[in-house]
Length: 318
Length: 192
Image (cartoon, rainbow over the protein chains, first blue to last red):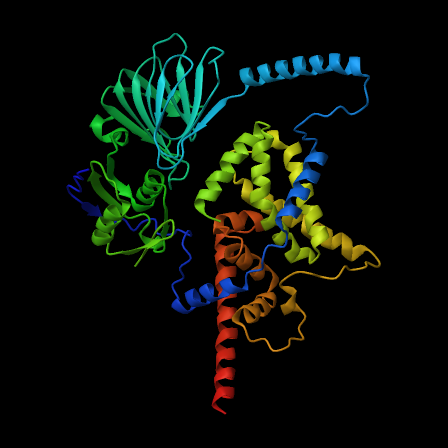
């Protein structure tokens, strides 16, 4: 496999949001040392596996959770046989109601991309680590979905509006193609909607009066700190849904966001031990990256950082 | 606890809210040992800690429909266990006489005060951590051993993130001073 790597790397320093508590680094080096040493004083787990099992059994009894519903009293053979059918019938009805009313959730593992066919024939392509929930049959007057992550939707036309909720934002369409990126784990919990075809309405939840209309080739973004979504701007479609072709595209993206993306894409863990750089931004493009180390190498170079491999990923430090 | 684990817990939370008890099991396996250990820091008794954490899980299931998907379930569980543990301590203090079961906490080696030869770094640190002012000790242990971030600790202890940070830094400074003076003493004895 040929890897066409790295076109340009442009960087922009952004030191505004330096206050991040994620790393365990203290300015005073002697405190870091004490922090490391004190790890040894960790108490061991007080309960063993069988204690956990019996505790769980106890809790479930008290909470009334029972997996196999056992008959609580003795019933004669014949009656018992009949009542078994009754129980089965009741169970079927309950199951049926469950299937009808409870949303279906699809969670894509890290390192994988999945395409889901929705009940109305629309499709959703889900990026690694994304979660999508929807009502099994799209009952009611709307097709409601909720998303945490990134997805590319191809929506079949219908009278019923197709509505995606993501981190308090709402995207409402009739029939079109569009991409939503909305990670609750990213620092701003920002939602970015890009339209590939057709027309989309985008607004903060419960504020449809602040809606903006997005047409083909435009994008808008909104986060909790914005009163309304940004005005539509033109976008290169292949860029914003580039993840579908395995591309990685970061435009003025915060390092924290980039590392989150790499963790999901490659199913690795990245420990940023220099939290002060988390909000610095970077622009970089990769067409078909196979090895996260290559990307980290580039980032480390332009940001003056070091990195080393760990059991399940990488650690990044100054 | 890692970031991934936190995301995991939030996913569990959503399923538990929808009454899926399999995810309740998963959450239980993940958090029960950690929460019992946490409760024991207050109660010093394993049986009481077990009861408190189990009650907390029962209550979680009974109130599952009220789980707020945007809030950290982990913080909520730690906070509830902390409140219940403190209540338990207070009610215990109000009783006339309580037959203490023998304490089997692994860290109580340090809080006996009368210490035999405490040579290992682990034992020394255990002792010093136990001598920290109460709030500093709580914040420090939640951060160091339970892996909660500052925001989560702030919500568990009902204080600001800034105070959390101050507590942890002060705790580390005290530990450092203890360590430094210990080093001096042991160097001196070696030189004699």
